[in-house]
Image (cartoon, rainbow, N blue to C red):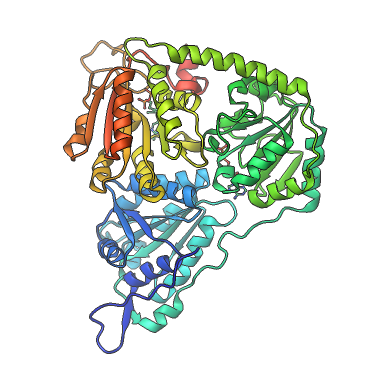
Length: 583
Ligand code: ADP
Ligand code: TPW
């Protein structure tokens, strides 16, 4: 975990014998392990921890709601391979952070939720303490690991265990419970220093077995229609050059999952994204690299994969490269599991491939190229239209150009249609730049992700938000303004969840459940805190506003009004929506 030598912080009024306390030991343990940023929200019992951390030179980013702080921490973990730290108060603050912790575990993002908690004796006897809650028990099933520290001299071990649990093997969310009484405990400063642990090799490489590598290569070699699927695990692994080599030296077409977009530029000639519905059912051998066969890949079966019914396998054979030895066979048979870290696995594959690997059959590549050309042309035609009112396509055509001109910018994305259309229209050019709703399709990550991307990634952020999606974390525009972050939020505003044209079928005065206030002026929210708010209704106006945001790097919110009849219920996953299915 890098980081220079950290002098222990001691309490300034310590007198002759230097003492330290729980507050300082937590800070020192984190700093010793190269952790320099805390995302959180202060209050009893961690208020002083935030203050002291800032005094010690850590970056403390204070949010308006713990959920956003948690999402920020988790995505910082994804971006950096260091656990992102979220700090919350007890019970309600803890619970507010818990969604993000569970989401981190689900997405394999390393984060540590550190929560203050109330007195054990009172909590365990349920005697009604201030913010009483058995937080450790509640966090445990949602976290990869959960620990509690009761004594100041154990803080070093607690933090070390939390870091190892978060980043080793399959990364995930870790809970660290720090009861109020721990913080003021003082111990001798030298003893405190000795109790801290600088974690050595927290995410050890895991070298794949040679026979597993051979098995995978044999299967790949036998393929007539091979396909590689890159998932966000591949993006996380930061083995970018090796992965590119693997794709290019084998010549195998590949599909990036949403957050793996940009691992190779989406404009790469081997990208089969524009022929997805052709390659999935047609492929005979599929190599998954850091991607699970979950719902996002239709569980590896059903019509998507050429199966006759929802439960039928398409007959593909799979290689699965993953750090988790339990992942294989979770949905369909994996013929060649390759367990190890992606860097080591891909290097081993490359060594076996050598320089004389035969390219996939020309018929396969030709058939894909043909579909791609057709679909790209069709999309270009749609994007070139300029309907009035503006719709998803004409707005995203502008976003596509702006991202192309600013390939280092982070693209945060949430919504339903706003998500699906952005993913398919906006090309990504660099790894780990696309940050989105992930495995759960969770709304509310937007502004937390944006803050973390700007603060930790130190690049321009463009957040493409459905108007409903934005509402979940909208108050964090104050945080964006307070820290003066280069974030440009674009709300694709169609007046509601999915779309805005429904009426109350019961005939009462209440609006329909999916509909919001018409013509809401979201841009004024940003203006309220000193940022730039812009209201646009044409692609040209959107383009100028985005260009100016990127040029000025000022916090900007663009309320992009689009056709309220644009979009479909649930976006592209209408098939999972019981009521829509019935219709
Ligand atoms: P996507 O949603 O993009 O398809 P998933 O989140 O489903 O991706 O899958 C990510 C997979 O990557 C997980 O199964 C996880 O175990 C794996 N993974 C994460 N980091 C690594 C790594 N460094 N090496 C190998 N596998 C990894
Ligand atoms: C935490 C359910 C999925 S998508 C969505 C909701 C509420 C919003 C869609 O409307 P939006 O986008 O953002 O305006 P668009 O482009 O289609 O108009 N609560 C949580 N997560 C999820 N996924 C939901 C609810 C949902």
